[in-house]
Length: 193
Image 1 (cartoon, one colour):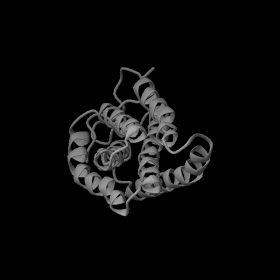
Image 2: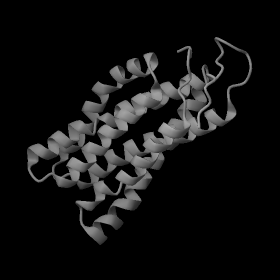
Image 3: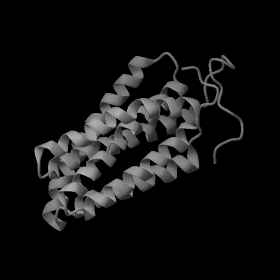
């Protein structure tokens, strides 16, 4: 269970941050970012038209700045949970879509992945202010892991269960990340951005 004592930051203390909280946060947030990218890659792999591939990227680019602003001002863990819930709904819609307009709407909704990445960066920056190199390396590894997960998993799931099952295969890891964030991670309070 998270402690009731807020983690120290550079603004309030020169003591090192709570190691347990930072470890859990630095594991779960990149996993959430990896799953967001995995959902984009899955959508790109299963898209029927090339224009569909641009939908999550464009909407994600539009959602990055509002998500960054909200995450800086509020509880990054709760923001991340709401964004992951939105991704769960988008993936559920993707598995049930049948009309071209439904696929376009799902692509726009999957743009929440960009907001997930922005919130993950804001959270990491709150725990490690001034360490942009570490955050950048972690983000690149998370993005590569998300692409690799989809490229490995999608053909296997599609072959075994059909293409409609592939979006649902990401739901279990997303729910697990949401649950673990709710149980074990606190947002860094009073962090300087």
